[in-house]
Amino acid sequence: MTQTYTECSDSIRLVKDPLVSVVMITYNHERYLAEAIEGVVRQETGFPVELLIGEDCSTDGTREIALSYQKRFPEMIRLITSEGNVGMHNNSERLIAATRGKYVAFCEGDDVWIRSDKLERQIALLESNSDISLVCSNVQIISDSGAILTPDALHPPNGSEYYIPIEDVLFSLEVYTVTVCARREQVMRALVDSPICRKGAYLFGDVTLWFELTRHGKCCCVPEVFCSYRFSNISASRQPDFYHRYRVFANIHKFHNDVLDLYPLPGGDAAKVRATRFSLRYAAILGDPETVRKQLQRLTELGVAPTIKDRLLSLMAYFVRPRTLGAAALKRCILTLRTIRDR
Image: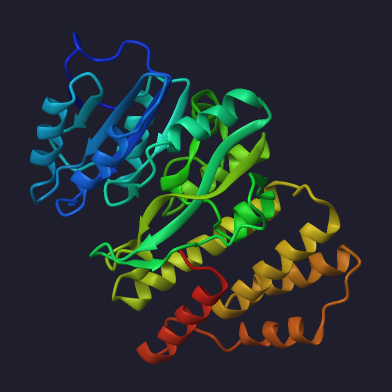
């Protein structure tokens, strides 16, 4: 995980033994970065915190904003840069490798922590229960302009902390990156040892990491809204090019299938059936008859007869061909996928 980079920090004034390292990757976030940083520096904690900002050669004023905050908060902020753009995965990897805390928290440069007690509450849970590998929270979804689109994204089942089952971490996207705190040692181990967390394996890296951590511990969710996740029109899965969006969803589908092939999911046969049916639906809409056949066979091996709905969906795979679909038809496929899973 070693990478060459330049660090701008004050070695004399910088906190020596942070309990928590906050990782913030940023690229062309001039409009949002100050708000993201403010959400971190306003945290009220009884322990030291460091903030690592990974600025990836933005073409706007992002770096200048990051530098100004590093000068304002030299005891807390470390700015990590390089001479050329390294990309999202490398940017995240170099920040995590440079962290010094026992715990790692995440906040991308266009998201916001809106509660000053976020870290205090989440770290207390990690400190009190060694079985917990990561703590997340409920989240509100905001627009580019900051307007609240969804005030309660998760609709938690009750008013107290609860555990998210591993199959929901995998399929339901209930873990938003901006909400996560995790144990640094486990994060580092996952990035080095796990085949699904290997750099470049997928177009994304957060869901793979949360799944791998939940394989080795519990995913605890605080039902309160601690953060704002920005629903950006320029994110990877929302670009105007529907063929690009299709490739993103196909990559998510590949990840699902790789997990089902590599790992026996805990939770008994009911969880396995649910996961298999989810993959089957994805395969049908993406036009992947080979995976459809595999998942139908999986259902049979689990002692479950495919339903009429399963078989009707399976037929779709033989008619959906994204390379030959027109833009309107492909758009309908994408919108259907997003009703199954949207993030």
